[in-house]
Structures are given as C-alpha cells and as structure tokens.
Image 1 (tube, rainbow, N blue to C red):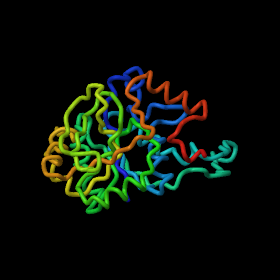
Image 2 (image 1 turned 90 degrees about the vertical axis):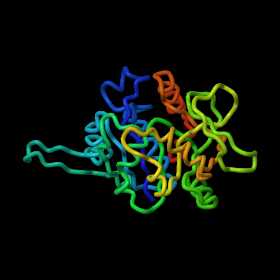
Image 3 (image 1 turned 180 degrees about the vertical axis):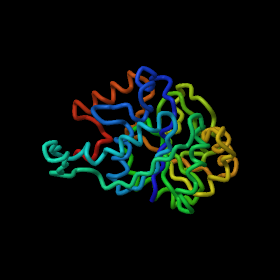
Length: 261
C-alpha cells in the first residue's frame, strides 16, 4: 500500500531554516522530520512512498539519491581509481518516488498530481511536518470497516488547524468541518489519512486546498470519517516546536520512535 507525503510547502513560520531546505527536510535530532515520518510507516510494514515535492525539490531528490551511502559504512579508495567499497548496509527497505508537484501548488493539487502513481488502490496520506505514535495498521483497519472515501486522524490539540464536529461520541462520521480552532477542546485534523481513489474527483486543480473544498464536500456527502486518537501527536510548525521534538529524541522520550525500542 502506497504512502503519500506532502513535502512541497515553503514552511514560512520556520523560515530561518526553510529558506535553505524544504520544511520536511529540517532535522529533528540528526534526521529530517520526513525521515521520521517514513520510519513510522515502515515500522508498521508500509514501505512504498510517494513524496509530493515542490519547493526546493532537488534537496529531497539529492537526499534519497545518496541515502544508501549515508546509511552504510563505506571506504573511498582514491589510490585505486576512486573505488568505493560498501562494508555494511543498514538502509531501509523503501521504495521512494519523488514527484515534482509544482512550486506553488496547493495541498489538494499536489495530491491530484500523483494520481497516476497511486492507481486505483486506497493509499495513506499525511503531511511532511508532524509525527505521531499511532499504529497505522489500526487506522487502516478502521478505514476498511467504515467504508468511506476518506478517513482522517482526529486528535485533541488547541492549535491552528481545522476542527471536526461529529454526531455523537459513538459515531466516526464527520458532521461538520470548520476552519481554525479556538482552544475549545474540539478535535482537529492531525493528518495521517487513508484515502480512496474516489477522493481525486473532489479536487479541481493545482489551486485547491485539500482542507477546504474537498474536505467540506466529502463531509457534505457523508464520505469523511474521523479516527479519534488520544495518543502522542506533534506538528513542527515553528523553531520552538522543532527544538521540543529534538529534546524528546535526545532524552530518549520520543514516543513516535517505536523502531528504537
């Protein structure tokens, strides 16, 4: 099953680093946050990635072009014609497709542009700036059980994201999706979605924000389902949040890094 990650934005709130690299390539600890997100999926057995690149997309391509060497012990023998000897390979079993989805394309447009890479199968989709300790296998099972076009992980956090309102505590069907949360205890869009190919029909073009017209239309049609999750989730939107995530890694208390345990 393919995993689509949106990694083409500018990261304007953390511009002291994002003017050099795309936001998903900003490091927490000593690895890009994009790497951490991919490790989460890989830990659960999902290793086929489609990276929706845009702004400074060459940085992402260069990173994966050299990924094998970055994660192996290697000898460069310049006395022997520049021979390269790999001593050990600890690289991940990933298949990574990096797609240039446009410099200024919006989130929905980026998803629409990778339609041919996804095909006619359901796929995971998330943003390239948030980590979570969610069991993605359980999310997929929930999606299959509820048989809707889209399932979104709904988390509790008073931040700058769209809010879900549901019929009652027992129903996963979203009744309303509204923009920008006050700190009112409502659940917000934490990304980590499962989408059916039918979702592409809700996206008009490059200028479409997935979080606006498509999600409102899916809600209107009863096709948006919310997976309520109360575990760890954190978005890296500012330098302070980057530092907080890095400190969790350094102290050995990073809940999303299950592969280390």
